[in-house]
Length: 94
Image (cartoon, rainbow, N blue to C red):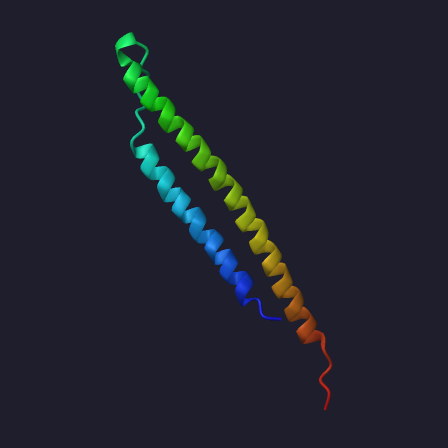
């Protein structure tokens, strides 16, 4: 059984997690950690809320894809190990 297509899918998941990581970092770089409570700061409060919502969505997808990638990788590793075990258990016919 050829596991290469499954390994490519795992690699794509890995790349997606890395891309989301850097995308989250770029969003967080624009985040303002200062608490704005004055009426004159309404523009900044709205911007903070917008950035916080974007971060929340990216974090949710990042966590989901990370779990999927890890579970998929462990299953793939298990299948590979099982196939190698079965292959090594065969009695050579001569």
